[in-house]
Amino acid sequence: MIGSPIVIDARIRSAVKIKGAEAQNLAAGKSRFYVEADVLALIRGPGGMSARIGYVVDVALDSRGKPPKLKKQRVLLFARPVPARADQVQLSGVDGQRFWSPELDALVRTITRDVVAADAPPAITGVGNAFHVPGSLPGEGETQVFLRTANNAPISLQVLRRPGEQPRWAVALGDIVDESAGPPAPNTLLWYRLACGLPGSLPTGAVESDDPANAQIAAEDYAIVLKALGPCQ
Image (cartoon, rainbow, N blue to C red; front, top):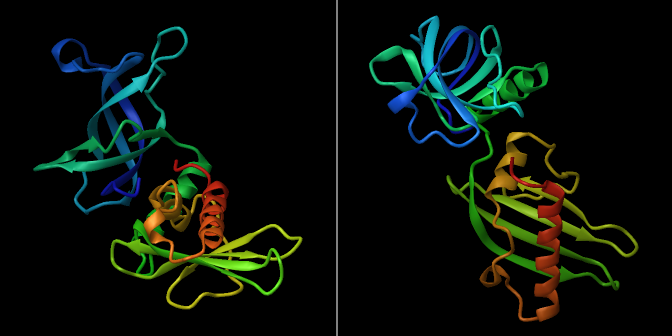
């Protein structure tokens, strides 16, 4: 969704099954259609879009080997323009057509708005450096992980350990760590940037520590963050 220059709320007017040579390279368990749909709202994209658009979509077959009924369905489309054709779009991926629901609509509009905001969190490109500082009490300490971003804007992770408590983590956008900050809300743009941009483990070379025990805790704290974020969706 984030990489799609066009996001459309539409209702399908007609769907014609594509056969023969034009259905080559079709994945097993799917059927290909040429769809015409009426644009209900242009959520994201350039002006000049036609009120009715056409596109090709591959849809999954049900347990009986039949495609879903597409006509009159309300859908959200994630697409890119077709040069010199205001009435045609190309879906951005295999999930470029999604059946509409109030929950999905609200999520899409929120993230679309967040993506174009001046203070939108940037894409994560890697881990810069990380370190763990033990506290004065056994089991106490703090891990900080500084991230690399596409526009070099500072983002860092902080994991606090207190004796007898579960580790608590937060994300900071900026150079100053806000002690009251916490994890990002699920399904927000910041959550997506972290869940889908962070590497699967803390790179060994990123840890700044001569103490193997502190380096191990930093890696464990990083894993806590990944587990809390959940898989990239």
